[in-house]
Image (cartoon, rainbow, N blue to C red):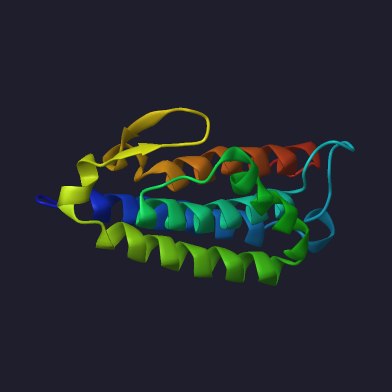
Amino acid sequence: MPGMRIQEAAAIATQKSVKVLHYTIGRTPDERLSWKPCGTARSALEVAAECALVTGIWAEILETGTCPPHEVYFQIFSRIDAISTREQVVLTLEEETSRLVSVLRGISDERLEENLTVFWGESGPILYWLHWVAIHNSYHLGQISYIQRLYGDTVD
């Protein structure tokens, strides 16, 4: 769409990535949601839960323009186990995505050039980070699809 703000494009990309996450988790059989290919791997449900939690923390990061330190950021992973059903992961994805989309749409054009440094040391204007959750979700969609392939789901 001509004249679309980058904030809106990021909101749409984020919503699309979650729509595909919903589809992918939705077609995972109940008995395979918590299946892991090995002891150190994550299940499809755990990967989707991470996406939901990361979406929430990025809503905060983009709203405030500051990233918490590494140890604070990674505290979200301690909450993955609390999201233990398909319904919980879908609800959390919906809630956190709604919050992030609202934040994305509310970022003023003036804020796009504000610098944001993340805990791993990378720095760039907020503009650079608007699509971060959509990228993160897409990465994890690949993991979930590979988990499905490992348990024998070969339907694309």
